[in-house]
Length: 513
Image 1 (cartoon, one colour):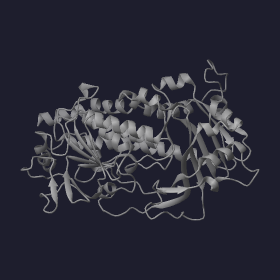
Image 2 (cartoon, helix red, strand yellow):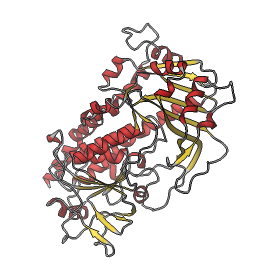
Image 3 (spheres, one colour):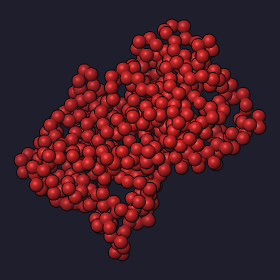
Image 4 (cartoon, one colour):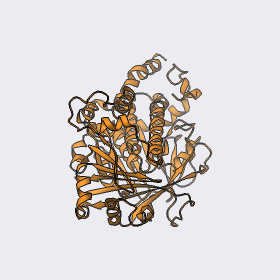
């Protein structure tokens, strides 16, 4: 739980005048859909429509931004996404979607569509990078996955991004490409004097709400601005209230993403045999390479992590250390002849140029909500997990699902700050816990020699359909609890439970005043 003074008092009855400035700045926008926004079409769940509709501006059209756009538009709100790039920015490689992510996509009605483009994850083989010798195997038993309520999928980044874009657009969200945001301003005290103002409120009303200024000079106002523009995004600097670029630390690790057509993989029989039955993970000596199928086994996505103590790599004029604009070769991962599993050598030789991102660590923001209580962070802007990690996408989808569910309950303006802080309170502990899990996994993978827990390997190496694992081979209670905590989490239920426990009380408190 966040223990800031504001969050400690979040659920207590408050002075009815506490958020008067915020309330007056929002009130004008509730009467008519504004210029530049489209009224949303009914969601697949009409009961999730907010009685009070807001105007949301989302800065960033990646996975977090598009997912939030759908979740909020499906809840009845008017949503516009501002994406700097001229089109959807597909990065190479794939994304792993464990059950906690696919359950959200299933509720949104697109899991079946994604299954037509994705591959089902069932196991991974852990191999020594030099020799190819098996170190262990993780098999996700079908019964355990089913208990989590959904599937474990692997999907190409481009396919998931396109699906979310189509979903958001179908719900009525407007996505604007080529929209470069030059500044973000918390709710001002007076209407702006310069630039062309495109007010979301009625043109004649005073606009005391947050705004973004585009490179064109156009100014857009909204009731709530969402920063989905990444860990170096402009919105995060505004929420931090200093406007400064946060100090970044490179941790000596580079991530590489690419893919190889399965038609090329089939040319190496030992490699084909390996990937046909499991997703290989080669580890050892400061290197980790993961391969898994995407696009219904038509491609093998490659994620590679390489320690590099020689200093940050040079970047192009356009790119930065923590962007996927960098192109590179996987040759730096290779060993001398005879010192690498030949199957991995063949796979890397087929990859060609890949995208590289250096692992940058930034201090976490103290709060995800700004002081005006009208700007909020989601995805990597709020809780960066590191490039290519397992749960970064899952967390972004969970963020969006919780925001959409909370704001589907909106009836009164005074509830807006409460819902924003509730979102932060529900998400921060979860994001911190998964970041810690990623770090633990990384320490195991990069240890030399790799450390694997014998008990977990014995359990996970059993066939997926083993009905009764032999004594001593099953997971410990702690291990099973960890799996359930991560995969069994359902963001929509978490938001609904918060509403029943706290939101209704707050709403009744408002009514009593």
